[in-house]
Length: 139
Image (cartoon, rainbow, N blue to C red; front, side, top):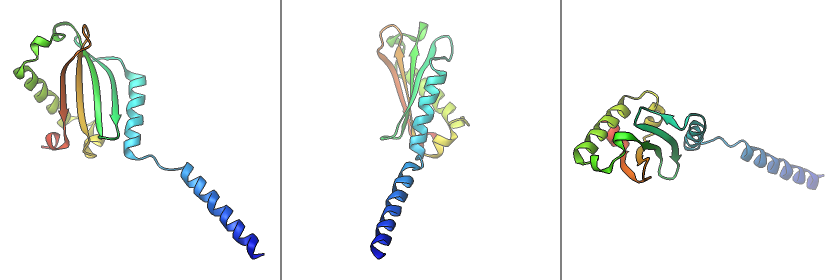
């Protein structure tokens, strides 16, 4: 009888482990990754204005970074206009928007990094890349 009891206990323990493993809760990072995969499928490409299109947004779990990929067209599609002054202006405007964004609050509360990549429509070349850390957007 005791042998059967031990076998039954072992089987119940094994089943419990299998069931618990199957209902593992998603981490916040896994949820963020899933959210932005769904966002990209449903919302992208998305015209921001006449010159900017959001192509995709993805979350990198390893470095906890939310990456926004944009295409620039028209008068913004020129690498000659992205001098230091223009880059600083873009940086200031995006940082201001990031600081005040209510939609991004759950991600900011987690201290993730935001990265904005702007590519040329005509050449595919990256024209501008801006990165913002929690230290920057929480000040």
